[in-house]
Image (cartoon, rainbow, N blue to C red; front, side, top):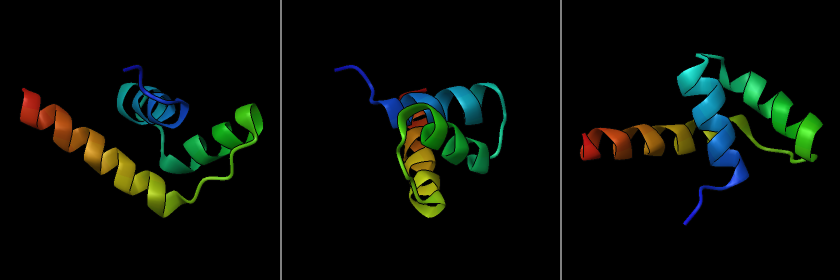
Length: 56
């Protein structure tokens, strides 16, 4: 299953490019008109990082 838009944005901007979550919020709002809460994105990012650590 392909990851969703939000997870892709988190991986690309926060993990690969080391940008803050506030930039992910702005990106999602401008590009996809998605209003995302910063706290929710933080929890998603933690979950992504924990999954990657469990696999590695």
